[in-house]
Length: 268
Image 1 (cartoon, one colour):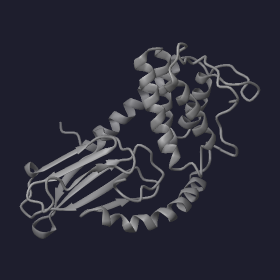
Image 2 (cartoon, one colour):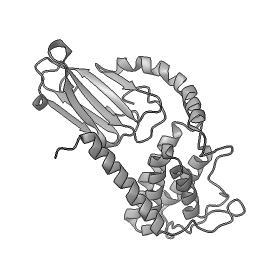
Image 3 (cartoon, rainbow, N blue to C red):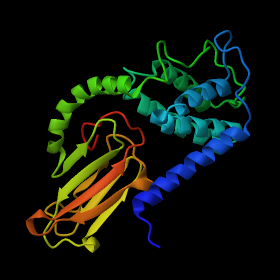
Image 4 (cartoon, one colour):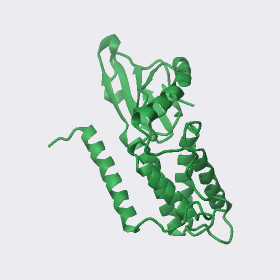
């Protein structure tokens, strides 16, 4: 029985969340600590962040990345340290884009953990490593249980500034770039020759790069070849050929790793 690609992707995402939830459950209850009364350890700080983020599905992808970073640190290996650095850098980069609204303190704590991890040294960074001066990761006035209405208004304000940039996005190349506030997906539409078939198209998408080649297109060797404005989920992108004759077009759909903020343009 054929299963629509959208259903397969949704099922895969659900299994990924379920796997991480079981892994967190296997680690036992929340660490006992007097948060706010003493300096936190690396493990406590990351746990507090991931727990808060995972409590709201809007931020769940970030919470998963923090969880995976903590898992990397638990390995106490060079591979684990590298994994933790990669995950935390990704979270920090995504937070940077909305830091004016959320997570100034969380970003600061992540930077401190990254500094420790990248410094190396004889004593490896573990979950028990103390973070001097850090007694909470939560930004002042931050509420992870804000209503969707309040959150939507915040991002609408942020989006106003980006909309002007979006008008200039067309100057990047011969494609149409579309995104919707609070939606995960972005759509890229490219006009192609009327005779274009699937065999004429090559699309390579990683989490940060997009390469598009179309045989017979006026732009050669590639129509798009550059760094995306922000990270995407490469395992969930898709492309299709639509229309015929002069309306023939290539449509590419990608899912943002971090929803809720506007890119404004396809490439950096």
